[in-house]
Length: 289
Image (cartoon, rainbow, N blue to C red; front, side, top):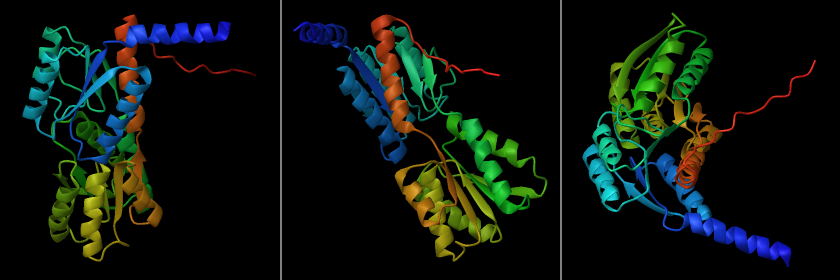
């Protein structure tokens, strides 16, 4: 009986703190499986905690994202989680949230201004370096490479490119013959790669800042009959990309955990709103002789 009473009291305690908590999540686009996974993680964690989560889709449009965030402010959300379409363009929206005394957490992509409580993301620079190292190893330190760049102005594109080029620069025999944006989009990846293959028919490898562009580029490469000649590396480890790696078409992808990012963003938002603190434990290590 005592255990039942304790359980009931615990449920009432959690419900008391959860009641009325409203969190807004502005996602850059739900037309990309990576961000769908991120939103799913956020929604599942919100359901677990018993808080209300309002998800809005910016559709890769900075102006729409600003309007969406203004709507969330008008709905008096307690916290805004934002995955920016553009790290510069998002600043005014974050500043409006700051003025409204609504704390902001950025997810996956950072903001270049405004007051942000917390940023949750993978190490994109390290991921870019991993891609560069893999390509250099596969090419034996010599070859021609194309870089497909993500949405200009996003921190993820800047950081992935930075890491990749830092690593590739260690190999004098490797030349990056072209860098061109395909806006994290599969269809654009296909079109851009078709054009680049005309200009650089002897290219040896492609690094795409995300899997959607990599998969689009792969279609162009297959159509040109060069599947066995060109290494293609993506970023995100989406289900389609993992299936392509398994089938032996996509050479590699850098794995992130978007679902966990979404979960963690809601969890830390809830933690801050109910305790006014955020706790990130640092892993312990046993040291022996």
